[in-house]
Length: 158
Image 1 (cartoon, rainbow, N blue to C red):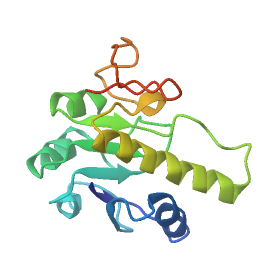
Image 2: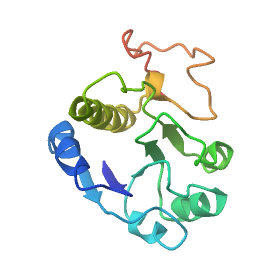
Image 3: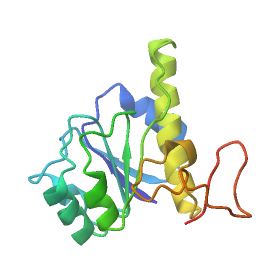
Image 4: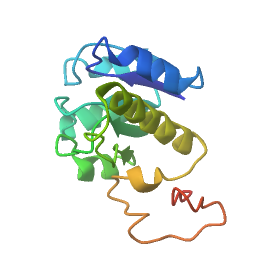
């Protein structure tokens, strides 16, 4: 899967690379996502954002034009993402559902990076992001059955 990570901090690079294990083609940029920087997503499958990125309806519209299918946030907070607009655009959304504040800083960053890559892996396998699902589709909330569901992650294929 091809993804662009917006608002990348220099300390995140190592954690994302280690978690990714060269499975996905990930572009890291320091720019925040917004209407003026959305063009960096062209040719990608997913965008990976953070809480200060603008993932409003106008930005989502441009992301859809570029073929983006997935939005993952490196946070448990999705208030900066217009979930309804993403759903209307046919996009899947995932977050980092667990807050790692009780962990050492480096361990928390590594676990966040691992969850982001896990979300990409699930989407690439045509599965729901499980507990990280933040879609308006509510596949987890509706407990859609599937023979491909992994009991430890509650992953549901689309």
